[in-house]
Length: 207
Image (cartoon, rainbow, N blue to C red; front, side, top):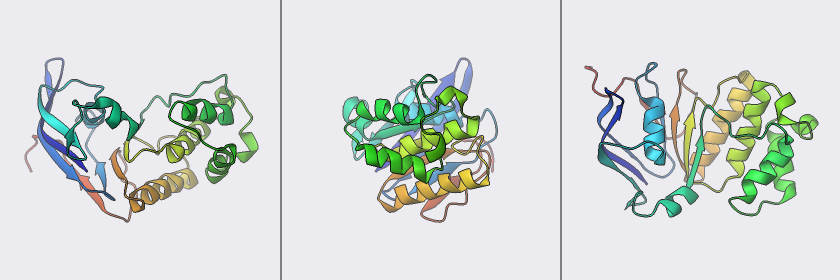
């Protein structure tokens, strides 16, 4: 479903990605276990169309993503370091607001998603009053409600305790089991059990 072919990305004068090629089928997840500064976030942003590439191509479902970016965006969910939450809205309001931009979601589904990530007791609190880990759980709940086949996740388990990390693993595995695709940038490998590939070194480095 996802093909990255011969991707070259520069950040200023630094050649970050050098001819990277990756291919993922439905139900697969790829963990990028590269060191700091090796280009994990750059790759995610390049796939999402948020970072220009010097050469190469990103194809989704057989189509160049630049040819029909709106269709690609409907299939895409990006979770970065900035969680894109509104601090003066509650957890529930954040989900209702962001999900309304992509389609209708029943209030019961929002309540169920927040319950799954352990936030029922605080779902009416303003997000700015939640801890960093609780805020990431709100973002995880939103991710599971988005109707997106491709997940691009940048350190999705950051600020989470062991229980929260287990929730991330369960969400990714459920997404893969439903035929979704995920690319995950992480320093600590997630204990995924289904269709997971890993890239351990930065592209261009010797073996």
